[in-house]
Length: 161
Length: 430
Image 1 (spheres, rainbow over the protein chains, first blue to last red):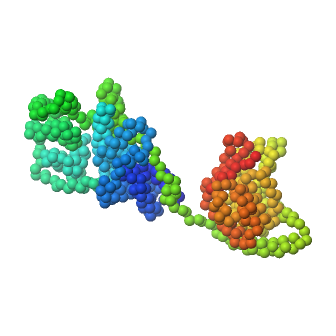
Image 2: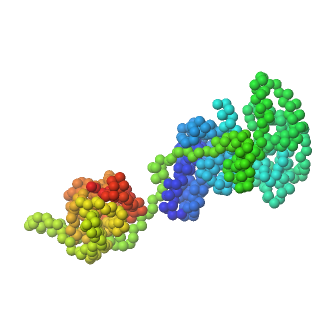
Image 3: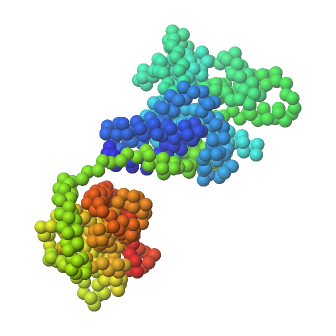
């Protein structure tokens, strides 16, 4: 990858990576730190990284760093309950979007991660597996289970409403 | 519990996560043992936050699934308890319970009804609610089929069959709609541009060797020019008034448009003389006529590009000394202005320094230089300023030329044009 391509990666993927991190940990400062660390690592290896693989490299790096932080700190320290509503905006129907956000937060971390990578970034099972260090078949199962739970939650909330 | 090649991955995950009962684990181990071709690794450590490490006990494997009332009872009670607590069964337990229900429906119903009666319901509404829950155990297969359909995981044949079935099944249709809602839509959240700029890395400036030579020569020439010019100026001031310099180089007309066609510009390339390191290209436009769009002429574009990219070369050459510059003010194209204005700056012994460039980075070169003329008149250290200008301009033009675009100024009709070079934005003036 050239310097110019590296800079293109900033333009093309920094926002995506930030959104992903923000959704995962809920704190914009920590999300920015993770984005910065991911790009720093990419910069250190930019000559060895293929431009076409750069996005996957960034997400893998960011994800692993997030897991490291996750292990170091307790989840309670990282997650701020109000983050989703405060920091994100979706074009989806507002009520449904909020319910979905809520449902997403109730999923096990791994299911949430793979669904976000699938929906927000459009990654294939293989690519998600590469990022999360899982097999594609495992990713698929997690996605299916996640969807099942999301649907159950949405239906139950809709019934209440 | 029926594990097959279509669903075993889910059980393996549960196994690895430690979410299975002992019997379920045995069934998984049996399946793994019976299907060596799948190369199932039950000792695999999941990479995430899960770290269950259980060993495989092949010796204790059971071979056949037969009705086991004790186990089914246990699962039903687990289900009922979970419902009361508002919880869900584990995927495996739920799946196993469904299997029991589907495989031994009669026995299952009897047992289920009996066990249900052991629960004291606080009111009828809860009882109905519970009943509804009990009779609608999720059928994972159907759900997973819908998800597979939406995820695009079905084969073409399966896809068609599914769509056909869904058309006649309103319940399935509703379920599909519900699952559609689980797909997240993109969120709009962007990092501040300053943050992204900080992430970017600056490219090291590659200045061609000829430019160094040009600059070195320019330094010598400029030194000579300023030195001798000062002397000449002192002498001439004592005797005569200032008069424009005369052109000593020959001009080659590259293009001349028939005046009847309302030609608006001409492109002239000067002969390279000893004092010119690089061909001097200039553009002069007839201010009275804008009927033709300059940008539509490829020669014009090329000339503008050449002009801008090489303007630093003009600075580093001494050609300006011998080229008479007829400053036509606003009548000339801005692109030309920038070059001419640079000459003007030299003529006036006024040069552009870094501070002025920074302050005026968003305005056109012409305005920039006009500012320079106003602000820097009377500077004594022309030489260092001249070199500073040469360096800065060369750097700007060589690094930012990829941003150079020429396009028609559509909001002002076909007469004007506009271009951008790095931070500079320049457009024609009427």
